[in-house]
Image (tube, rainbow, N blue to C red; front, side):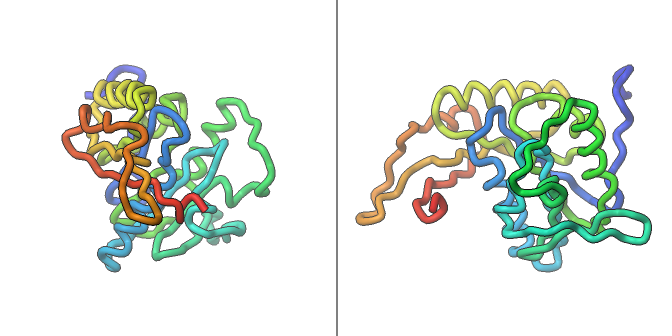
Length: 225
């Protein structure tokens, strides 16, 4: 039974499963993980229809990650048509504003923009929609969790203690809201020497202490460039 006062969750039309990628703090590579997760799902099985929603209204980075630009076209019923690359349908606030423009909005405007990104997009039929959530545990993340059914969350952290403390608090919040946590990705886990391929754990290995299932992403020089 729904708790009193909480909104009724409404599925996104045509979307089977929603996977949320979240982090307690910024700068841990959440958008990188989101883009790679969506691309990997679409690549492993070409018949598997995948979408990627950039829910970070203030700092959208999916257009850059997915090498996409331009304003989406509209259907006859005024829904936005996602831009596509790597066989992934993508939607982001970054497609709707100029690249150098800053989004300076109060909460109600942000919620309105998020609602448009969720409900006014013609996704067609999707097996999975990967949602790149904004950093932190504020209004936007709570609105996502309370308004649409979430199949599971992938948490992203770097190995240093501060990031782990924040991601632990985020995981506790998700558990209180009965949102399944699929696993935790330890990003920037090692730096690989370009000469000898020796791997160095510059931040330690703390994430393994709080995750039963762990995916690791090395810090690669090619990606940083």
